[in-house]
Length: 351
Image (cartoon, rainbow, N blue to C red; front, top):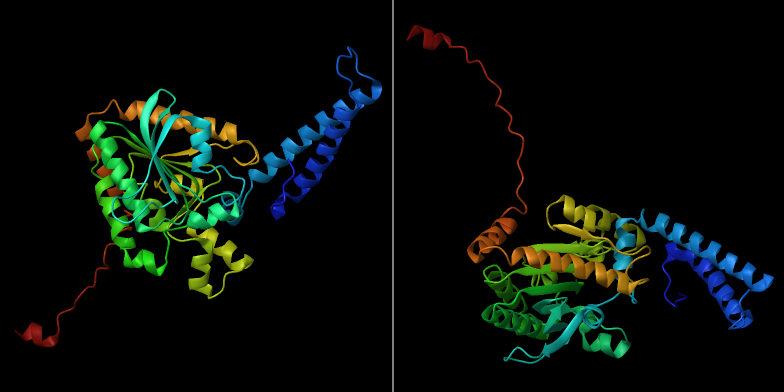
């Protein structure tokens, strides 16, 4: 339970977890295996552990039910939060990874492969940020290069050919902004993905599992159904990027204001019609109970695929088109122009 990485608003929880860990260690030392009845000291420890666990659960529930937008962003970036390869390990059977875009190289920031998700055969595509320092550097901290998006599209077209549905897991602060990526056509690669995914003749389900930053996220998220984990974020720009543009400085105050204004939380995106569903996370976030978070994700994805696979493909494509055409539409209240009474002049009367 203890972690070197600690969110500042979780400090009260950290103290409880320290006490809980100490009590559990003492219980393991004092409890004798094979004894039918526990000693009074062991019984007291067990009661204390139960009390601490309940306090921890209640405190976490209170904290995570009142997160600000900026706190949600920080939870989405927690280093222990499950990533695509974690979900592959927890959910997928017979995963066969595909590599390379057949043009330039293989981008480790994008993971693609065929697998079984429950009883459903599908293609899985997802961003990978990395856990250890060396992996993070190799994966560019989840910021994909053009070859990553081209690899994803190559695999998607293969899934379309075999009649298999596509599942994408979004977790990126944005596409890689380096010189080499721009020279190899970063914007063009994302734009082609948007166009091609909009007309792939197979069901597509996308889930934002952590960060959903701008075109880097949308490049694999043009789908028939889009969901978000409860403490993920999805926006046109990161809070820091927005703060740097508006206030010329990104700090705790400007980041908080930017995150609130961007309306980037899962609830905000649901209210705006950007996503279709918010997938509830375990108390305290997915990083505390990865298996429970994975099961909730699996259940929602499989239910959506079961529904989408029953639709005629032309109807599916039409609904996908209409879904994205609705985004950004709004109606301004129309006001009747004021009636101005024009009185005839003396010259007009003479005529």
